[in-house]
Image (tube, rainbow, N blue to C red; front, side):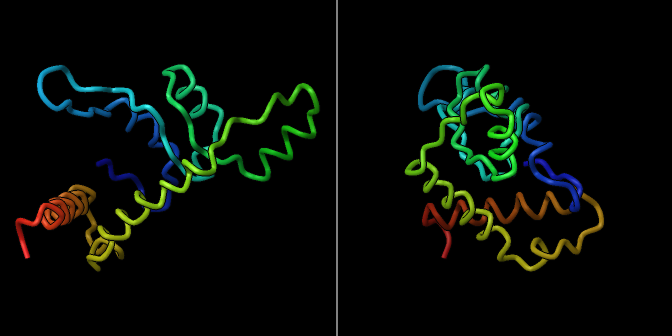
Length: 140
């Protein structure tokens, strides 16, 4: 988890988060650092993000915003072809959004009462652990 400024967007943090991504394997072997695909909303549709994913051979399931479509079409053949987009796979993004909604059920996290980022991050980590334990059935 990475806590950024409240008024800033999420997309600038994407490349930093991807550089720290580790997916543990079941059994032996080192952790994976490259997921098969990344689902994101229109805010993550930037050249830098798409280029990064393409270079790492990660499928980007990110819709193209209307303004980017207009710019591309206005350039004609120099605008390039539209990015690939799988509508059916994109429907799976709601799982992530529901996860964020679950974490924000704690009022202090939703309104960010904490002044220090480290304190806020501690609350997010605590809520995530509690949510994870409930999903496992260890707590009521």
